Length: 113
Length: 118
Image (cartoon, rainbow over all chains, first blue to last red):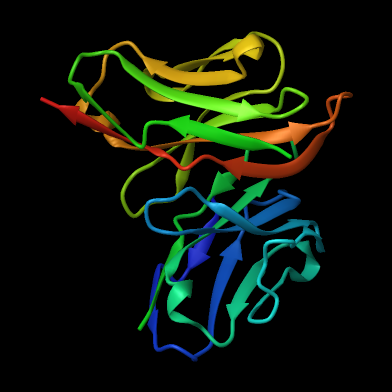
């Protein structure tokens, strides 16, 4: 069974530029999470989807971040414009649904210069 | 609101020694509990989980954890550390209501970096 796939693995952009991350969850997993992990810290939830619906986006900075999950499968997270403080690892995870555990992709390391 | 605290951001042990990583949660109803491990430049890998049933749960790589409601704890242990255990470990909680239905939000602790000395 294929795991959660994220791309790209690494991205370096200049501040004020846009960037997008892509996630393909495990087949059949209805729940999809996007987390941000700053250096030396635990992951922090940005948004959670149940199928196509964003059920928890309270921590998503909506002035510059957006996300979508079309057809309840793949998801894209976008930042526009990026700021220096957005440098972090962005993790995607999926789950068959709570309370079953989430399975993580390898993450995208974003560096904003 | 649910929260999780990992005591000790760094733990150092000798190879063959006991590993003990501490996790305490704050939740009005005992949550679902998880331990994840993260190797450098990798995503998080599930070590073990507690949902219901036996309070001592066994996971991969020889790790186990015990849910103690009275202490609101879910500490991770391994009897004998191996060099390959060096990584960062995260405790995570998923709150649920009194009926057992999960709210779905997974909240992580700040992590504990485990160093294993030869």
